Length: 294
Image (spheres, rainbow, N blue to C red):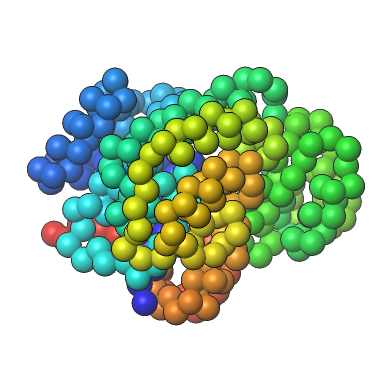
């Protein structure tokens, strides 16, 4: 069974999507429609901007979404048996699997990016990657601290990202290293994504998601919040809302997809980060990047 996986924030690069725009009339139409919906020419930033321009949350998230969804749309052989996305990528997966329209998906991603940016400005916060510790030890240390700090991204065995207040993350990093972590690396991010500090963003996005039509997807979508497959539109909505303040259970998602019959994983969008994570979950997994036929 073919599993398709969609990347999240951090996969962006200058020039992303330009080849799609130049090779496909359908891609050009969708990129231009996106420029209209967003109210600015995101294609100019994606194709010719600077790294700094592309790092802005209100640009990064729609840019990665567009690259992923437009590529999936113009692939000749896109026939998913199951799909999943890492954080932001969950929206790309839902659109590509027919649960969300392109327009609604883009509007939700733009609303999500703006809501997250505002939440970041309410309270200074951050994230850190913890390498070389088991999940239980990371969870236990976070639980012991009085500052807000929680497991945010279960990326693969031995790699878990924590999220919280600056003081909380700093304190947690010290304790992780003392407990035997190989590294505790602060990330260059705007705030504490996938933590309770995103509550204001969750409330704002909830209103938008509730009023957006979601249909039954063509295949099960394994959602971040509990790594389980879903096709019921109401449950998908509930999980999308919970995702902003809940963890991304990517390790568990990959394991569940393999248990569900996945025989190959194709990454759709910029970069190949997810393929590397899949391989760390299961060395035998067959992975590839989606590409246009020449």
